Length: 387
Image (cartoon, rainbow, N blue to C red; front, side):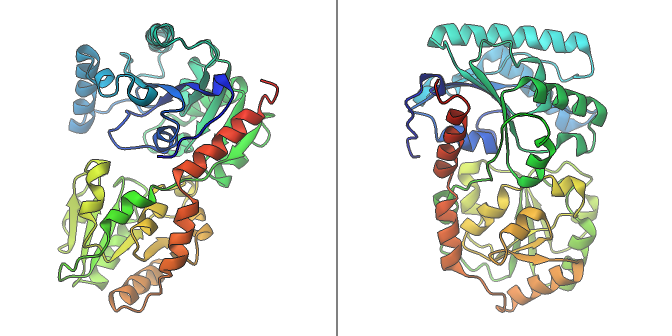
């Protein structure tokens, strides 16, 4: 981790709302991990936008959140190590209820206020990462506020799109500035009247380089790691499985869709999510990485963190025609239909798919999270040069 210095006091104190720290590093966690040491960060874990469903996964997750709150276990994972304090206030996952939102805000304000007093925070910067955080902006004593936008949440299945859009509009009105992870997302805020910065995804290149040198498993291994969700083109995966029956197609990550169709494919293996630290060791036998997303408004709004992580593993990458994949061509092989996708993977299996390892290493070296953190700080500092 590179230290990212700054002379502005209020940029040394941050209150950040995001997913659970350390469960699986999010874009925002990667960014703030670079700031630890020179900066103090209070990381506030809150519930997501989507109401829980009657499923084993959601029930287990809800029970875990309750145990974390009662035991204080989440706070204990970090303490104030390197300037990080993790808070996990008891909040309820029902954003449609005004009463619940008021209760959540009360819990959050109490928890954050105690932490700020204990740590001597006086003029911190607030960073929020989801529309549901609209209620906290302006209520936590922050010197300034930033909406760090990693996605268009209103497009996700299971979301109440009108509620999410309303929350996002309120959030946009109240924050001082917006940081978006892609041009596609940033365009949505160009008429907001607020400063908007595009900060593309970074990569932990050294971490994923641990998957090298490649080990031969005896089979051509096609690997996808990430959420196994609605963005995946299951028809494409079926076609790929049939086209390359000799290949082993590994899908690593949490499954949030009905997996029966994928499980029925004889050469497709679904593997559970593993801790970020352990992931490279699972990739040493990978021959090729794939990004088999359906190209629609949902996937276009995403800026998949994993594309640069795939490249950092030092193997070819084949992706459908997502905007973020197009920007990385020709380092990434972009396929415009299912036939072209399968043909590219077949070419890789025959050793005929070009891969410019030198160019990839040069790109990932310049796209590290330390560079992204410096770019982020320059933008935040520019909001109040006289600060």
